[in-house]
Length: 536
Image (cartoon, rainbow, N blue to C red; front, side, top):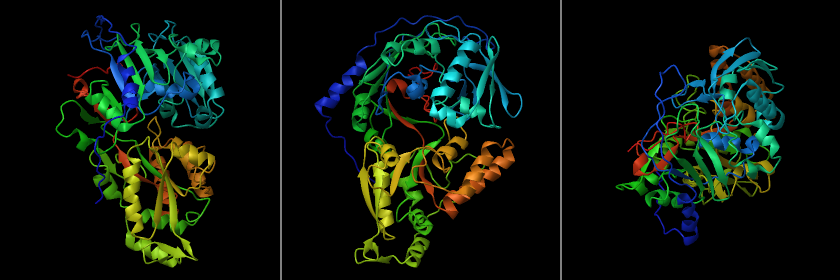
């Protein structure tokens, strides 16, 4: 078993200075009492306790307020909302919509809650919803990929009909995906042109917290007291951008932040016995570490080499020992809990050695295989922004050496960009990109990461049979038939062609202050919602 040991080192002054923002820009607001109403109405009773503002630290910087390119961040932190929601219990349900009705294979009726307003006070009616959907369909490559050729028509004051070009059984999931239709005021957004800084303070979203400012250090939000579900319990939220994982944890321990995101798995050891910070996690997982293999160059242009490589990975050790608790072992390409997940990711170094022997790769004195004077070396990309990728890669390096692979680990700021632009030679890469889409369906993940024309098919998979199955899945409504197709797809990806595999499924973890020790995390990155408030 392989365990990485870390110790908390002193954080450099420059990092500590970078944390100061967490206490700046938010002033205390007096909480107001909302009128209690029945469960059948939209408004709910507000928490009348005077809570302090919430400060979150994350390694990912939000570049600007462009809702097309960056709107997905704002539903994560309580500013933007979506038509539908994939909640913590894995149920897709209406959010700003009152209902979603399937009319036929191509048409869906979206009915809005009449109480919803933008933070500038303007109502979210059918015209406003149609405007944002039309704009996203026009400008967003992601939306064009999920709903090619779709149209939207206003059919009532609070009702629109979405028409797809082909049967699309995942429309509810698409409407619950943070990157597709974040609801915003199109009129306000288009009035600023590309000067997105002017959107701060404009109230162009509908969520409980509105944007006050955004710079390279932090996003600052304040409570929207006219919010449709009631008065939000927090006076404001600050989201600070702190790249270093230990600095984020230290910020919580020092009382400079209430919540740290994207924390390393060994944080449990770091926090053991402490009372100034606690570890909490989401109940279920949809994300994990994905292994991408580069099929465009040796050795992974050969199916046998890909299969041997994946058989040499000890998934149990990575899930149980390297990452520890709060992680599910990747026995399947899809997370546990889905009826169609096949447990066909196996570890078999004996078979892996046999395959490599058959391919003519011979072990040298140092245990690394050679063929035609060529060393069996693989360059694997990882990201410093995902702290779990380093211990996973080190474990894999040791495991795969046992069957004759020499793994060179290369840390790059963004493996995704490196793969996409092909700026450096690479054979494999780790990415935290789960196979289940943000709305709870596997279709978009397969279309983007696995299909031949997928925009994130960085490894160059080109398989007509697999494409046909994925295309068939995308238009199939029958649950049993969908399960059958998904099982066939998994057999090809893992067993027959070994294109990719998952290395572990991670329950999203948070380091929180004592005031938030009872916080329940989200598998869908909805970190801040109307319900978020101190639990102690």
